[in-house]
Length: 148
Image (cartoon, rainbow, N blue to C red; front, side, top):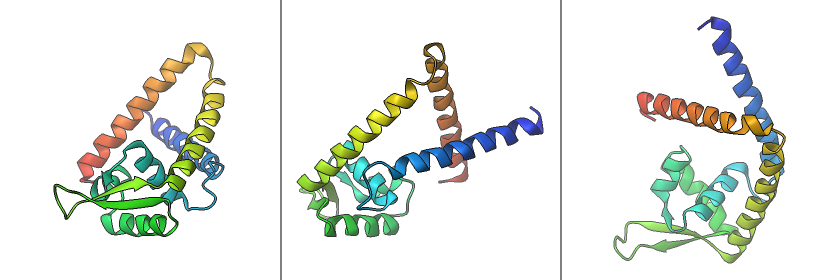
């Protein structure tokens, strides 16, 4: 591998991050921060998730995640429920208002990514998905190696 190869890879990932960041600004999360939006979406995908698992999922420490959830609770988007099995464990769920926002975000993002995906030529779509899987696996292995 030439030095230019990894530099080109880094540059393309940087550009993709920027484009995805701009895309995320139009998700319908204008009433909440981007980190709150990510938390809301993860809770929507994993009802009754606990704080520790949510923090791990979003690669955040528990104190940061706790502050994020506190703000979502104050905005009446998320509720906390104490586990019946373990009173130290608190499950997070979307409120009705939170679920409505979650559905809006999901629909908006599904529409946008459908449009983007269909701009990729049919014969390249599976290659793109396999390439993304490879990148995600490499990132996961790197994080595991570093102890994150």
